[in-house]
Image (cartoon, rainbow, N blue to C red; front, side, top):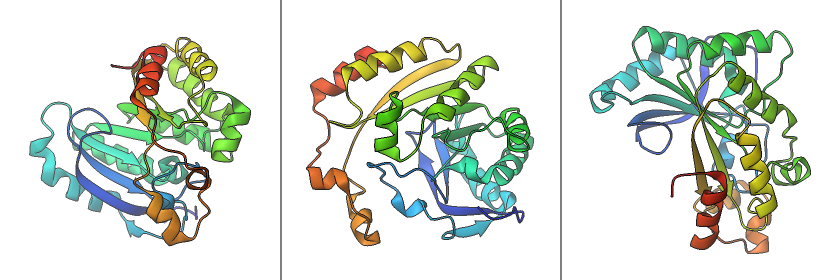
Amino acid sequence: MTEYNGKGLVHSVESFGSADGPGVRFMIFLQGCNMRCRYCHNPDTWAGKKGEWMSADELLDKAVKYKAYWKDNGGITVSGGEALLQIDFLLELFKKAKKRGINTCLDTSCNPFTREESWFAKFEELMQYTDLLLVDIKEIDNEKHKKLTGCTNENILDMCRYLSDIKKPVWIRHVLVPGWSDFDEDLHALRSFIDTLDNVEKVEVLPYHTLGTFKWKELGIKNVLEEEGVKPPEEDRILNAKKILGAEL
């Protein structure tokens, strides 16, 4: 992303999100992502130059119009793309959200995470204003993760360990893709990793779907999963993954 200009590059917003955090959420999708997940349903968020530049106050003014629907556990969830690529904007947004008494949730793949400065100092500060993180662990095996996403998972797992160390609440999410991220041995390995963490409130298994396939075609991007004829997982495989990972049945 470019140098911070006081605004965030926004892909879209959704007024009544119900699947990305507790309660009813005002969803903010930021533009830009370095990962190239084979199953991504929002490849239109990859590019870091498209979208609409908006200030934190503009977004929060939109969000609070729906505050009556949030009740006790709703709020805003920032997703992407990958929101942590715009950490300066995210920090300003969450600071201002907390001043307005808004619950904050971050949906992230953890891909930008590093302990190098000055990024890490910003992340440490961001965590002071973040109530919950939805952490997507795509695949526990690093080589399979690279094949699935084009990136290593080493810094992703390091971020998970850091969040555990500071006791920041997280929900772990795993997208189940037949032939790519549904191997029993890896699901057991992921469960073993999750069991080392002290901050996991919930585990969610998200079945792969093909609803975003048309976007790949519109953007002219090669879709390996479609070429392979990969279908959504069968119910027995979803149930198997949930049992292994300790997700709600």
